Length: 468
Image (cartoon, rainbow, N blue to C red; front, top):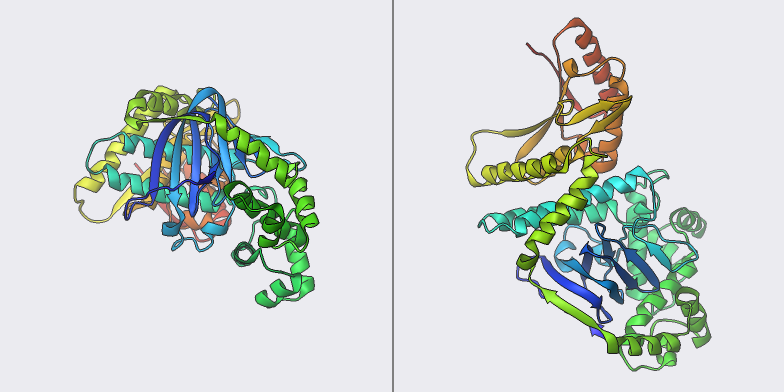
């Protein structure tokens, strides 16, 4: 049982592999984040003390230095994407020390399923992330020489999405007030310090001094951020790191306890059992036996091309169909067309500044049925992603001749609500909102929509056009 070394090519901060899974060896990755995506069948990921069922069509993360193994009862075929955290550390300072997850931790239980939540915010994040994966896979399966640059665009977007949307402390707090950048950075600094010094004695007083705050202020800060006390969080880190020694060396339990910072072995036993439900020795014996039964088959990703394309249509684009409001065949063809236009823009030098325009109330992008409003988020997601990784500016066209005064307020607020959750305000503030009207009635609607935009997105750039 040892670290699995992921070989990254110079300047290429990712690795993509395909495997058929029965039982993987117990292992861990150093300075690597792993994305596990079952494209046929389901898997169970045993990471630390948790057992997470990841169903076909979903994904999960395996965090840096976390001991894990994966099993499947139906020989699942999985795509594994590895990101080089040494590379991304220059963009995200705390990425090596941060915990990411795509499901909600089940308090009091080590077992969970990767879709154990029902709120639209988290669903939106996961749908958009899967859309990025679809874009990545289509580029991987493209033998065009320019595909490599497209792949890097998708990898950067995946990393940004993981950091901004799947940081566990934010993912678990979706229904609470937003976390300020100052407070989040303080929390991440503290976690980094714990992970780098867990084997030493660390007190609340030590942390308060490092942060130039009082112990009382720190206690309130920590209570607001964490589900566990500071002492429990420190001992959790010690227990998690002890598993590397427990399964990767022949060190005695006493020696491991001392190495990870417990003052007495009885405290190690207590905290280990709290999280893992067994003693350290029982845990070691269980996985020695497990290692006798491993079975994994490596696959060439080109050999599963048809399976991968079917996965994109049946799972990723199906989410965008919104109960067949848009047919999957249309979404797939549209996806390919937009990717082609993206390639054309990269390949051929363009004249002057370039803009991508989304006409949000165009019938290809919007439907109103029985009082409910539906936006084609696949189109919108692709163009937002496109504008973030190209020289294109993004224009949001709001054609008031296509709206009805009965529902336009509901529609524009629903659009803004989803955009704020999907892309964050900092992205929306870069957009140009172009409001068009062609009559007295649409003139008043245009002004009302402009007022909503100015209130909801204070830094928005809004321009009005009379259109014939």
